[in-house]
Image (cartoon, rainbow, N blue to C red):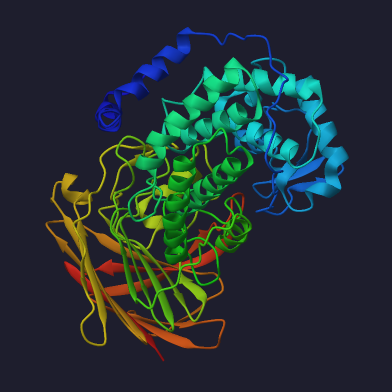
Length: 544
């Protein structure tokens, strides 16, 4: 039963939903999937599938797979003792197209046979629409790479796509509906017949709408997660290659449009990645899930797409997605001046408005906490909260009301950032209204001022509050040396370079915490917590 005090939170969550999300969530409870005769006849292809592995193999030998940094056996596809996300990954069949896939052909054949035998129609995780979407694409890519499918496999695949078409995830939308549509297009091209024609038409129609909405004008994915951006970019490359394999089924204008979108997405990915070649941690992001940019660039090269991005600019304002990136010879500063995400689908959002990450001399120094777990537990919620990010928390409240595993009630909206590149410094200033819901009606205003060997961050809180803290999470490879002064510490980088941190208007506490660069991984690190003594404080980071 819903508690009375939770009603406002629920209201401020559901009021943003689209009618189709509400209608679809209700209608799913009142219908059952109906099947027609499965198709096993396939279309001819113009060229074979060029299977370019984007991620290392998850197969560990002896029927053991490693997902989310947990290694286990394929003993039960729906084992309630295993984490659901781990089981989902098992059902995806990603290993069919991962590094060294040719060496595991017999293993993969047996795995497909096992899945069909142990996953009867509409029973278990494997018949959920998202798992069908990813698995069906992986099977088809593997078949097109020279692995001749048995009729039994084709029969199962046809039934799976029939189930998918009747369970499209309009209650979720976003990356889930995108994956559904991609699978319909793949199956619609792969199979012959009336059903396949319908799948293809429906999938292309959905993608026409979703690509236009989900890929913003600056190239970023609208869920504002660098990890999911790279996942969708890999999907777009797959779709582009599919248009080469089936040129008579996918119109040239569609292929050309996909190619132009891919170019913009590569630019965004290059701007937003750290110098170490991996994603930054804003919203739900972690390493090891999405392909790295360099792997995606190799894939695009095989498709004859030009995707390398170079620029002499020091400042990049990704206005549609809401990030500002400043880069010079020594520093890369990535700043979040974005909304939490699309109003109707903030499921991967964190309360991280006006947070930032920073690399110096190629090493990550200031890092958001990352993402190691999904689900409904307390750790999932903790990782989404404001104090898990490099920004300011007021009166112990989050800047946006994140709750449950994937919910947001009242949320922060940022102002338009002001960027000044005059002189020897680059300045970015922005504010947000997330704390206006508090009794003191607080606005948080933050200014970053970056010079070659110094970063100054100026935080102002307009309104009334009891306590406030600015959190700065430090990468675990950085050594923190405390001093006798309450307002000063020293940071030693792996390069041997030393930086001095000094606070003005606040004391600095060094607090133990954890960093989560991958799912299933927790690494001890420390953060600097600046306690506001006044309504404004300054943070100085200076090369010693």
